Length: 613
Ligand SMILES: NC(=O)C1=CN([C@@H]2O[C@H](COP(=O)(O)OP(=O)(O)OC[C@H]3O[C@@H](n4cnc5c(N)ncnc54)[C@H](O)[C@@H]3O)[C@@H](O)[C@H]2O)C=CC1
Ligand SMILES: CC(=O)C(=O)O
Ligand SMILES: [Mg+2]
Image (cartoon, rainbow, N blue to C red):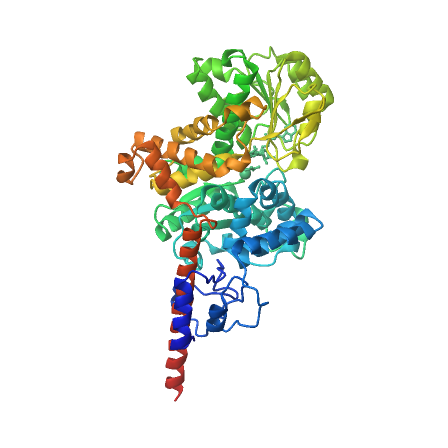
């Protein structure tokens, strides 16, 4: 324990804001600083030493007994961040960069987010799609530390107890997956943990949700992936996936357990192969939403609004062919139907503007198979008995203005299809939205090359710029990361009773309003990722307003604020490790925790010692 003298020095160092104790969200599971709550709850009896840190003042190093353990220079956080970026550059492969960043997040969360915020556009592909896809594929090999909570099927009946093992006392948001459809990579079982971890890193990066209130959650309900089942390093339970019914009961228990443990927690469902039953069942009961259906729908609608404005073709004249009729595809189309109706079409007219293709070809009423419920709404009855098996046949038949890819099939928008789209349209709308990049229906380069640079393009994963006729063109990224952080932040801040469809729709119109005129003029359909924080604030503000209109909010004082005041208030609630005051305030809290922790630990050691005497 720090002696009285050294404790005074420590406190003086805290007051002079020089000291930073490296925070670790898994404090009680391995090394570094312990949170007092975990100490008292778990009865730890020995002090964990503070890790040496080059940003600590010399006084603080003496007080913490880390003096001499780091080089003599006292460094600013900015300088530390600069070194991290250099080290990142030295990593030869993308996956090594991913591992480096994961370790940084786990050893020094503030420094990690400082990096993320300062270099969002270049780091987002490393912590999220596409590299998170590779990380999930290799999760069993690259695993180094716990990063979230796992709930297994055998834990049913005790889910609440397991949740209580989470080391952070206050959780406000969780991203939960069952790993059954990770990006476009299929069933990855518990290796899917990379997705909740990555999405929550974006919650913090984009919307300033404090890292310690975010819970990455992976359900271990078995896997049908034979390769994983045979892999000795696979860390999930070795069994086939449980049935839909068993999963349903498990989720019922989970939703109750989550809400009893952390009342009002916002739940984002992510990458479930069949996400529809949970959304239907819980969306009006809890504060929850499905990112793949709803978040994707909203973000793509925002891209479509910009694309229609650019193409000059009215909603009533649009014809959209969707390759892929899963949760994302139908979620996107439903959101566009809503928009077309607001543009004056009847629901029938709006719905008729869509043609869907799945593994069996064009979805029609008479193609002879039993259609899944979510496909029926868009199933065609005007095919005159003819069935269309390939995308090419459907494009000839429909003559679409829009081509949407949510199929996971790399390259299915090949040269002939893109040529055809360019022949049919002055500005064909081409959105290859499947993730990660290797699963995209076409690349940016292909879309531009085969449409003579005329395509209005947005993809799910990032693509590099393409030079067309000497002009550098930028790919827009229509990824749900533009809206889910704002939706989640709004729901937490206004304490939403539930997250309505109108709140989701509002996130789309809100996002579309953030596209700057110069961005639009330069051909972009989505705002620059460099502005993602600004964008998330606007989305959060508008979603809160919509919740208020529907009386779904439980924070009445926000109603009295003007829009600009609400915006400022939202910003004031956002975690930002770069803001000196806020940053150092966090450090102060953490350091005080350490002092308290060492006191508790010493007290307990003394108690034990005197008991032995
Ligand atoms: N850009 C974004 O923000 C988002 C992108 N996505 C991506 O969208 C893709 C699909 O996601 P979900 O709809 O949730 O998956 P899903 O598994 O529910 O749907 C995939 C669909 O593609 C169809 N499909 C598969 N192979 C096909 C083939 N050879 N020919 C024609 N159709 C085929 C399937 O029949 C199914 O309808 C994934 O790659 C995912 O990463 C999903 C959510 C957000
Ligand atoms: C982006 C996303 O949510 C997906 O590809 O599933
Ligand atoms: Mg997803």
